[in-house]
Image 1 (cartoon, each protein chain N blue to C red):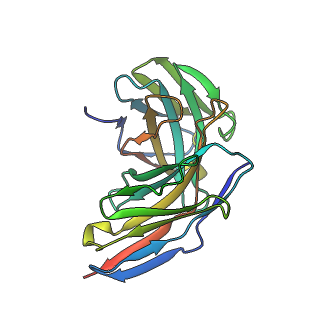
Image 2 (cartoon, rainbow over the protein chains, first blue to last red):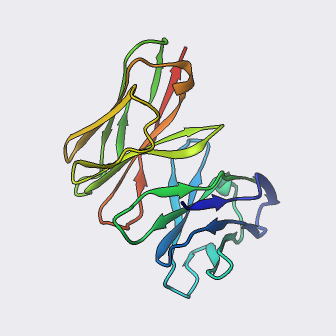
Length: 116
Length: 113
């Protein structure tokens, strides 16, 4: 079974600064996807970024980028030029790519607060 | 597209009552997922369907929970009888292709008194 660990329950950072959220995972699979989802106070789950394990290049989406270290099973999220609207819970998630199993396994989340 | 639609958004009921949560996936998506979110257990998958067929229901807590997907545009999650420990936010999500990202609905906040 896969496990996803987010070791930072809470973080805070000043507006416009850069922040990095940590995620590690454990799996015996070789082909899989990793995701970061954002859950603001509205509780809507919003996909932030995704990474395919077979791709060596780190994914980027505007101010959001990841540092994917497959050998270390690490998948951190960097938010640059943080904005007040980035305040939310952030969940790291794992999904196997083979076998037809589309189940997402989530970490426990990191509560990020952007301070004005 | 309107996104994944869930109803009701909030449900308050008394212990022992039947509760039915509803979900309309994004048109054209062929996979549908039911998740539950609680403070104690976080986000956990209850069941998912591919092409209206249940694939994995190992996350369904017990026989009090049941889910159906009678067609590609509608699914229900039923709890009968409900208990206070069922209080949680229930999310429905859908995806268009195997191994694709999942799009979540706004969730239903269920409170069982």
